[in-house]
Length: 272
Image (cartoon, rainbow, N blue to C red; front, side, top):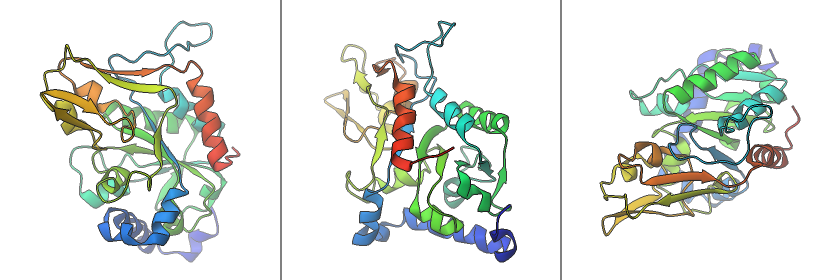
């Protein structure tokens, strides 16, 4: 591995990672102007769930005819990277002592700086191992978020030139931060061309979707679910949970995979 193997103690680095993650949950963090400016410079992207019931995209697999799934973006990033590691645990679920989802479904990290990650935090992984890890996360109902955090880079003592693929639930640090700060501070976006609509004829106002939205982008008004398009990240949890199939998630952009990959590389200057 890298130079940090001999220089750092296992437990010290683990505690450091958790400490920085804990800061992401602390409301006091978001009263520091320097930290807020740092977050405004970062960028993250939510990848909608493959299982969304009414997902409609125009792009098809060459030679096939199957609809291209949003997880294709994750698979292509994994395949392009030369350096890949899988974290042994999820700091967010560890911090929150989550019992709803496996804590061992840690992030996948891609990029050359991951050569210096401590072996007690993450392990090198093949393309096949990463694809299987991501698939397992989806099977457990977790949401992929592509991103990069200056907090995490500092905690891991690595350059900020990597891409992380998180597998998120209600414990997600970004979801938690939405409760403590303004919308413009955390530039977590959704796939270009993605829309979320609610059928007034089918919605019963049961609030199941509101309870499932980890970004607080849905609320019930006059017995109808209303989506805040600025806050919504297009993850698809609401559509999957709706008992009336009243919520539709659509990706109108036929080239969403290629465009999303280009957006990631543009933001991070990602060189596989």
